[in-house]
Length: 159
Image 1 (tube, helix red, strand yellow):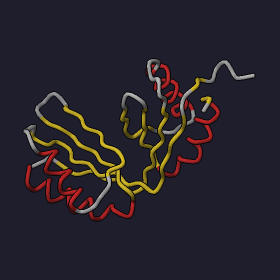
Image 2 (cartoon, one colour; image 1 turned 90 degrees about the vertical axis):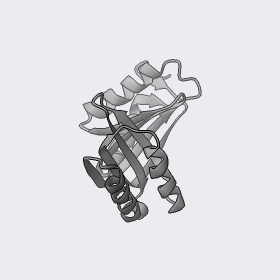
Image 3 (cartoon, one colour; image 1 turned 180 degrees about the horizontal axis):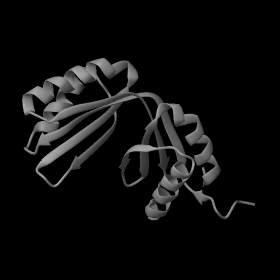
């Protein structure tokens, strides 16, 4: 018998050994994202997660998550782009992780996302960033919380 409190999903995907680097306060203009991601691609850096935000004051913020082994190279490229475009600052965290709930039929995504966020929050796991698509929702969390997050999400969802 299944727990009526559990929500059925397609699966749980996760990745540790991740770092986050972000450009904050980028003056909004065409082509900056293209330049940034072209430089990352030329350095053979695979981006695991992208979070982009337009803040309403004509500034963008771009956060990328990469394998921790690529942290230094990503930070160096980000510094170059920062100097080229005049962003306000760079933020980074060497020790983050990603947890993702996927589903082929995400028509109830608000239920899945809300349940995921509540589960993490109820267990004192801080969400540092969120990205979603038509088939998944991904949360960036502190690396130290990965095992706890996986345990709690496995309790909260039918995977």
